[in-house]
Length: 345
Ligand code: C2O
Image 1 (cartoon, rainbow, N blue to C red):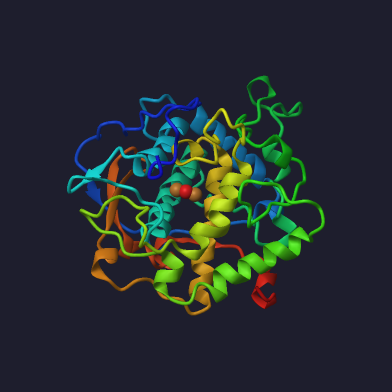
Image 2 (spheres, rainbow, N blue to C red; image 1 turned 30 degrees about the vertical axis):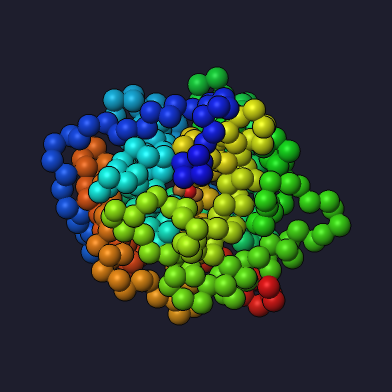
């Protein structure tokens, strides 16, 4: 249906039973990482430092090797997304949906925060930063090629299987195609300069149409509200725009399926691209803030909370208000040019 995003009459390629494992003991309140700990750097995928790709692949492979009795496993991490988007939770009698509203940015920030720490922990590197797919920069506008092949001959993993590969993607977009940040389900003809369209799209969604907290983050959504979409709600400019376009552009368009993996909430987390895509989405929040943007000040926003499993498999409750300052969370984005700032929309 419109809220959860999948059509139950079509083939479902992933499980829709998304409930998280029952808790390992009582949930604890979140503590910021130690002030003295090293800041994790999130690098753009097209400019990873030497050796970083190996680390990243290793970490994903280790996550895939975990049993599903472990909340850090690849499948359980994927299910987190499904659980918060496809009606696994209710609140005051209403299904919870964290998309299409002001919960979108903070929820995904927390999701990646724990995912990144889990990956780092699995490879014994407490400075590991999740890379970002830099689709707003002309140099990063294709799917990074190392996600594409199923087998990598030179690779050390079992049967040469590439841990970053996912079988449910749009085949026609995998090999050096420029992403369409304004994609709405149909490929354009070639009479356009896709790079320029993308820069104009970014300018529109980050600047012209993102002029206050509501237009950027999305509209108010609180306990007891019907799950969004409702006709009257504002969806944030980036969420509704390039964020969703990239999901649809990557997902498998086969009309018999449900646009798995990336094109649907319930399945998106099964594609490793999901997390590097959202790393760049999260970066948009920090860029918008650097341009003078401010988070919502409503206490309903500040006190909204979620529970995630951390890298030690313990459930932790986190609040929106704890998510606004990256220097407390101890990660940052390696800078990359933003040529869209001076492209007219
Ligand atoms: Cu939770 Cu990109 O969606």
